[in-house]
Length: 297
Image 1 (cartoon, rainbow, N blue to C red):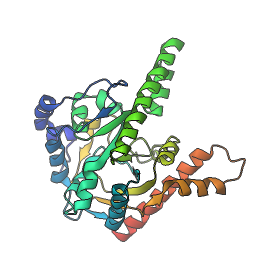
Image 2: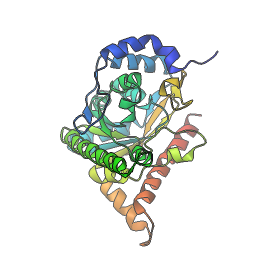
Image 3: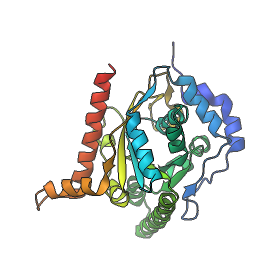
């Protein structure tokens, strides 16, 4: 049977999405924190529930619970998640919410995702999907560099850099408020969806080092299976498929000793130790991914 794109499969819901959408189409330092739109959320939940096969499940539930307990006791928690499609966050939160486990249900409610500006600014329907979840919105480094390189002149490039600085400073302040409220921050460390044949899309961003320095504890979550398959840069052109999806959590990691021990293991003349550290974090995620794949094959 021929697979449908997201636009083809759920286009009938787009009118409702547009009607319910309230999120800003342009991101400034004034609107980097955006709470979930509970009117658009049921449509996103439908996309997930329609396509998750019954075998879909969470692995390492005890690790999710330990993470939650420590957050409840005052620790500042970070979740680093592999990224394959735009339904990674919706499916992850949906499975936590429908786990039947009170701790995991509350963990889902406490989760705030870091999101790039593109989800708000690229397309009104993509924006409507994205606003179903509470987010702190950033100006990604990749986007800033690209926009500066495409600037008409030096002045425009400087303005773009200033815009990025203001937005990201506001985002850091918003994230700090989330931490103080006992919310957890979810980040996709690659900063983009993985595209087969393009290993650079799976490399961790150097900036993730800053997140690990700001939090007390972290769990690494590997993603197995995906409801959407990327075809091109048009997010609504992703192919929809029913799939068995698994989200697996590592044991809870204490951020500061984890980072300190790795940094101290590097030779003094190591070039860009922060990137080396993030490469190591991504290698742990990759190892975890392979182990879960073998276990469930």
